[in-house]
Image (cartoon, rainbow over the protein chains, first blue to last red):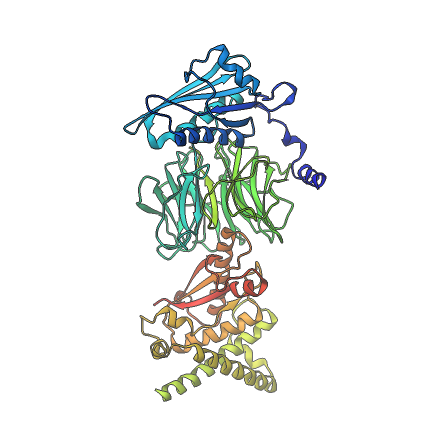
Length: 427
Length: 202
């Protein structure tokens, strides 16, 4: 059985992606062992320690760092008697003896909802501090600050900042209708956005993460709306006759690509950010939809059934140079361009359901990432380290997050209803 | 009341005969409008057989329709120019059209149904605004199904136009796979969900 599993893993993960990608600092301890990170519970200044708060902070950082796959992290209870952030040589001994290479220590004070928290990352082997950050805010910022320091740890270790303070918007049926919600990337703080009792679909974040666009039937027709996360006002961006669907913000935030059917069947258009000046990019009797910008804003991937079945195509942003990207499989949809530009994630339907794939932009390295259940609508994290997607599988339906090579698949959404069309914010 | 119903039934049968006759020529898969003139090419015998069959079909359809019809709404909807006919009651006047998986072209059974629906429109509500809603089964992506559902509704719209229904009276909307008619994960359920439904909107 184990051998079988290994064979399956070898099959779905080609050797190339098992190694660190170029540009990353090689992060391995002597003997190719994965680095071990201890996340000590934060020390409370002034007040008696609050175990819940302490566990929350160490759990968040350990979860983020374990998900990254870069280190093997473990939340630990306080082992340094002094409770001071300035460690002396002898303070490192118990951590060294326990086999840790890195240590996070922190201390916080919480007075009248005013939170001050300072984190420090130590190199246990060389007994020195690597980085430190101090945050001022309110009690509700505890999670965000912890995620933010996890970003910093990842930056120090890999040279690239993490995306752990970002959010995921999604569609859920928990009220019985398809409404749009937003949550932290790890599934915490779920917040309903729409409450119109209609059908709401395909949210997408503005590049600054402060607004979303989405399609809603709330006035009868599937129109494209825009709203700020901090506000309930919704503006119709495109309510042209027919479909106004699969809208996606350009990386610079100045344009929106979407599918409209005002001139017949579904075709790809771009609009100005206020919904004006539609420019038609595809002219084909087939269905064209679900555009996805390249990170430089110069190309769009999209779905078209011009050859009979839906496949992924790529074109220049003026509609020229259309070429087919996916050549395997009969039904390939949901393209999303990696923020690094080298790959496109998509989902492929077979008789067994959907699975997530990635493919290089030249059509090579077509790689299946999921095998369990049915998995749709991939969306990349801003650092391209992770892909989120919706999954229906025996271990639980919901929004899942995995590393870009398909490892570490973890359910992050907390509800028990169905989840659809997750999309990851860039900020 | 009874008299007008009988008159209506007679009317609808004749309309169905006319429309049905046209539709039947579609067996040879002509894509565009088939005008009544073409029917004259048929031999008398063939025409008689066809008419008998259509009359039977239309009688059965009428029975089914009457069985499901909400009584109080009947006269309003039938006299048809009433602008406020509720879509729920009006829906039952029309039969739903079904499609094959990932297809938007009309099967013969769909063409037959549309002939009947066209007859109802032409006879009883020539000025009614009718919305055609395209739907898909649960397979396939939600987004692609929105486009496919619209394609289905537009196939229906185009065909009804060839049968003489005014195109400006027909609007389309797609619900993709968002509003299944029945729940279920098998072909029986899927077949019932790949459909186009009709509603009088004003």
